[in-house]
Image 1 (cartoon, rainbow, N blue to C red):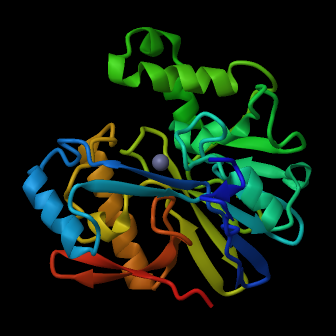
Image 2 (cartoon, protein in one colour):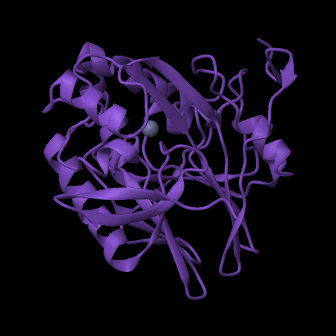
Length: 294
Ligand SMILES: [Zn+2]
């Protein structure tokens, strides 16, 4: 399968565009991973229960289909990319960010700032081209200070269990040479209209980004859920990817509850494209309502 064609037909461009106050917000499709759902995908629910939940959400019972959706924000002053997808390091069907940025009319050189939510490979590997050079040569790269402290710690990397070794290596591949990125803190306004929000648990330093223009607001919530069609309904479920499951659950509850109260638009990195929607309360959990493509 070539990069631009799928079964002989050109691929549809994968981007969406909407206004948020004076900002223009552009969800971008990096692709989809589709695989058999790994056993033990949810630590504190049986595979049969999880299969039921997948079926109830209209998905195949035993397949894990996961979207990767970085977000571009044109503020009028700056072009800001939040997370970068898998670059050329991911499995087939991913790494579409560069093509979809081009389809949206944005050259890599035009990106002024890249904000990283956390250091998992599907969020950072797109910082590099295949030859290891920066994919966004003019961009300042901002990273959560808690992520930098955790993943760049050499003693922790040396002692990492097998399951995390690849992640530590990937972080070093991206950040081990070249200009050091600028660390940011939760609560810090990174640029006018974009503030970092504590979202720890999935990884120790993960950050959400609250984006405000005029009287409109939204939040990029990174990986507070895997697919929100499952984990909004079951906020207590602990996905196998969460490094601190208790903290991840508390973060999920806090931010989903706030979104429900404030009717806040959310962008989930792993929601079905265009990965934006709203949260309502439903029993002991929540329901994810995809925003209309308008
Ligand atoms: Zn992710």
